[in-house]
Length: 179
Image (tube, rainbow, N blue to C red; front, top):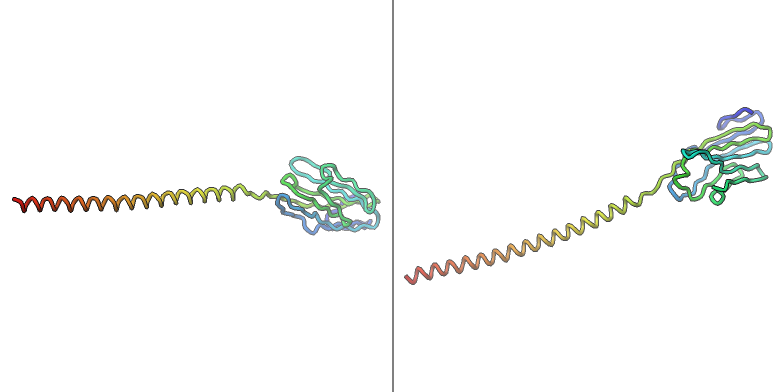
């Protein structure tokens, strides 16, 4: 059987369209791997996930017939009549290539590919910034208090020195007058 590329129609009449070949998602998001196929007879749709960890068969079904979902994806995948699937609660491990193959009953098949990137939301960075900001706020409050104390101490010292100077000057004046 000859394999056809995305969007190509076979002599038997099978076609496949992948409207969104690249999907970016964040962890815990639900994603729709959207395809549209048409076929004259009964078609078999098969989805596989390929990543650095290997190849995993996700699901295979015949239109209006049986469905075979892999145990790994049992509670995480929803299938649609047009050949699309929805993955629930994606994780970083779900990043990779998703291959869909549509095979008509006469053996002609066509395939499509969707690339999925899954990103983590890094809350640790925000937490670090918040803690660092609180630390800087605390340090600046301590420095302001130290400056205030130094300023008060300086004023007290200047008052004492001024009184001491004044009393010394009076004693010197008194001594000069007594002589």
